[in-house]
Every structure is written in structure tokens, then in C-alpha cells.
Length: 142
Image (tube, rainbow, N blue to C red; front, side, top):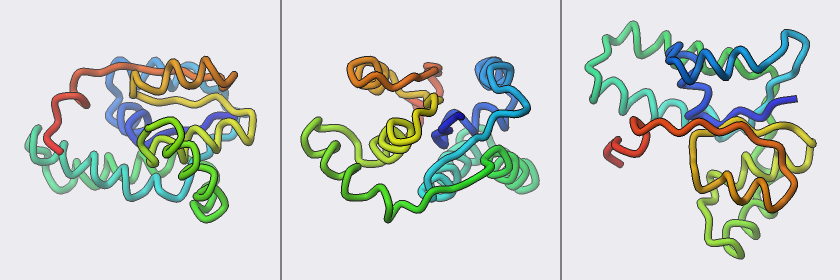
């Protein structure tokens, strides 16, 4: 089972070199899950792509739809929010990242992400992870 964070899914939807590499690591029989926060985060990333890479409306919508289509099942943030908040507060991490981290830990899934900061956290907590670091995400305006 795979937990997809929004940025990794956008890489896959855009069919970047990193995204294609991630796709190759997922078997056809494997379930891809995420938290319901995924849609909003993916929309935010695609909005930034539209502005910075001057994507057309059609390409923007297709990228968003493709990213959403990668997820087989969404878990409600309500079932994760208290644990994600506790982890974010105690570890001084982004609560957004902690939703994906907590979901991966709870389900025993492998977390796919693009945030270097999560790498050590996953290793320290026995959470399988595949991370890709793409300077594109570091350079995007907030």
C-alpha cells in the first residue's frame, strides 16, 4: 500500500522524470491511499504551476484530474487530525505533512513524498518512505 502526498502525485501526473520513477515503483495490484487534504493541496500546487509555468487552463485541469485519479481511497482528515496535530506540535513539523505521515504509520504503507524534512522522521519512526527532492518545489512562491 502507498500513501501519496500531493506533491509526489503532481510529479507523477506531470510525468516528470521523478514522477515516472515513482510510478514504476507502484505495482498494479497496490492500493494508493491519501488523506482528504490531498485535493486541496494538489489544487494549490497546480495553481502555482499554472502561474510559474504558464500552463493552459486545459493542462492545469488535466494535471489536477490525473493527480486525483492516482488515489484509490481517501481517508478523512477527521480520523487523523488529533494525532497529526500532536505529532506536528511535538516534532515542530508541518501539520499538513503529519497527516500523510500518520496515515502511512497507521496503515503500514510506504509514504511517497517530495519533502526532505520527512526523510529522517520516517526513518526514525520505522515508516517506509520513498522521497524525491525536486528543486522546483523549493523555489515555488508560497
